[in-house]
Amino acid sequence: MDKVLKRKKDDSMYDSRYIELEKLMNIINKLNKELQLVKKDINNKESKSKEVVSYIEQKIKENTKSIKELENPFLLFIMGSGNYGKSTLINAILQEKVIETSDIPNTWKLDLFIKSDNEKVEITYNDEREIIKSLSNGKKILKEEEDKFKISKKEISKKILTYKNKLSKDKLKEFKIEQERLHLYKSDINQIKYYLKNKKILNDFTIVDTPGLNQTLLKNTVKRMNKYYQKSDGVIWLIDAQNIVSKETNKLIEEINKIDNLHEKKIIGVVNKIDIIKNDNDLERLKEKVNEIYNNKFNDIVYISARDALDGIVNKDKYLIDKSNINNLYKSIESNFKQVCEKKQIDSKYKNLSIMKNKILDKIYSYKRSLYKDISDYNEIEFELNKSCNEIYLYTLNHINKFKKKKIYTKEDLYSLKKAIENLEVQCSKEIEKNYNTLIKKADFSNITKNPINTKVYFSKSKYLIINYNNFKTVKRNNKLSSFINQLTKANSEKVVNDEVALSNHIQKNITYLEDEIITTLKDKLDEIKDNINEVKYNTFKNKYLDYNLIKEHISYLDNIENILINLR
Image 1 (cartoon, rainbow, N blue to C red):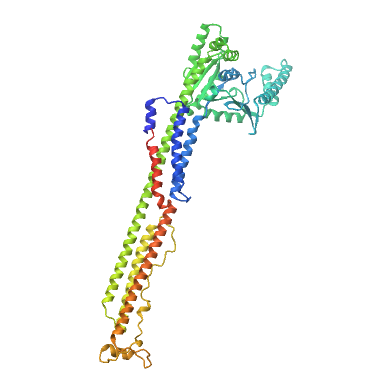
Image 2 (image 1 turned 30 degrees about the vertical axis):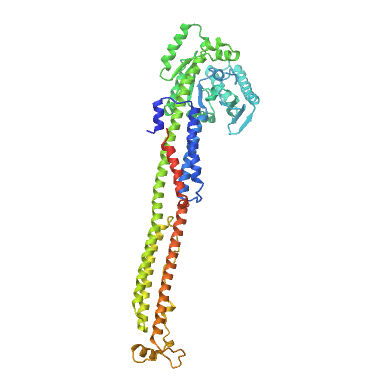
């Protein structure tokens, strides 16, 4: 188990989520600071360095988004059947009269109550159209919708009254259903968001008021309600003290419990309207009955009078507030929802941090293994390149020294020398090509290098291998050299020398020039090879990672990120 998680488990309780948010964001900020330093020297968008940085950056962004959810209020879901006083209860929970109470149950929309610095109402229609109004103008629109509903309801009631004595009970019921289907006003509004400056419960919760679940709901409303329920952090289930044995309520609770099994919601049962109960004995009997029916369905059951609570709050009547028992509901919300949700939420953030930590470390370790291998190859190439070039140079120099020991006088001698140089040329070219192919492959870190350079060396075409014997004529004819020269000398030769020394010196001088030319040619080719391999090595390493000269600093920044993650406490 990670140290940070182990510490929290041992402590059993966290600081407030705002303090934990600050702690977690400090970690994220440190990581981002080091990440920016890593990023600054990486230019190639296709490099492995860019890939690992992008991966780390993405994981930090994901975790930051998750951590910042600690700033968001939890979602408190208010549910119940029919007109059980939900509007009054919500006003009591908000500790201010925000929504108008009505005898008509909320059957057609979701109401959300959200903390905001600017008070307003956001209205959403069935076609997903949204409008934003001031709080007062928004309430006017909603009142107009309610009035249209009431008017249509009255018109239907008049028609039903006309046929009351003309139809049987069953037929009258059918007639009522048909009239409501045809003429009952159905609003196009399916969601209202109240943005309020409430500094109390909305600091910790966004409240969602659902339509009465025993009503026929529009498809869009049901869809939204299910979405919010799945996201909710706690549920208040409202029960009417006058109607606790409702089969409909039981059925609805069973259905919601099936959903709840998938989402592990905590539910507080709130039995409302205890103000109608006349004495303590009746209240005790009510509690016994409620416990008998609901004891395994709720995490807590609270008995309140939302009406007394709201009246007490509005009129600042402490007696009514205490009598309403609303304070016990506040405490239950605190212990069953806020504290539990905070712990669960913070647990989740530390768990996500641990997952992020392990993923980033795995990525860095994998990246470093590849990087260190290529750094090793990068450094070995320099050594191997110098070694191979030195070996080829010494091999050539050794053969040249053999040439010096030979006395060259005749064309046959010169031909033998040329053959020896041609052989040297072939052998050097083969060795250079073999070493070049090995090293250029090793030096190409991106495996994309094309058109390798020409590795052949050319020694045998040197002008110093051509001796013009016609320029030499000796006086003495009794030796092999003189006889050979006589055969080569033309009658019209303009330049005549009278000793063998001049010819020998000329040939040896040419051989010396030839040796220098071979060495120079070889050095030039080896330098070209070195330059090419080093250029490929530098550029492809840079393409794969970054400038080799920045690697030490690069690794240092990555080490800092590692240490931040490893040393989490």
